[in-house]
View 1: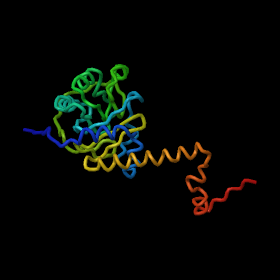
View 2 (view 1 turned 45 degrees about the vertical axis):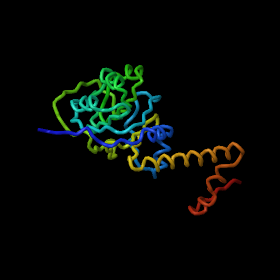
View 3 (view 1 turned 90 degrees about the vertical axis):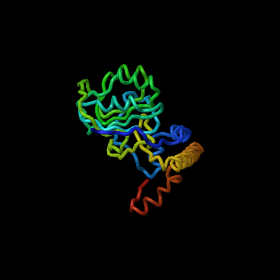
View 4 (view 1 turned 30 degrees about the vertical axis):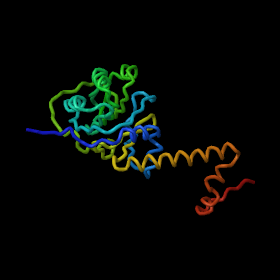
Length: 225
């Protein structure tokens, strides 16, 4: 007998909402350039965006039994995070399962395998970020871990960690770091607003970024004659 648990601690919903207000790139930079999933994991529509607690699941390549199981037990707002070995030649998720997810109020899907029915997924608007697009079908044979740490896109994702994804990429925030990352993200936004205002007032990138000192340290001499 193989027993899996569906219980894990989720972050505060208000904190997840705050993090949703920042881009994946801002969060990545704000938490010390950590947590970015491999750039091969892309949205099926660049307008798609998600932010929510990770509901993790491990699937065998070309097998979506545990993905369907995860959909059955995930809670509203959860983002299903699938580890399937970076296998591109399978379409393990499509419009039918997306409708099941949307009907339950799930927050989205991040997977390191393939999906299909992308036109229907775009029309439905359910956020899907995948390693590939592939029409090849899957089987339902292999049981595996659920709600345990998984590796996806080169990052360890634990159940209850926050996953933020948008047109630029996917980033994971450790649940215990989420408050600090939200604060750091806002600080970064405020700093960048200052830079933008200065540029619009006529200041140069040389002045604002301290390029002259960097050039001198690197031995770079610019001849303007």
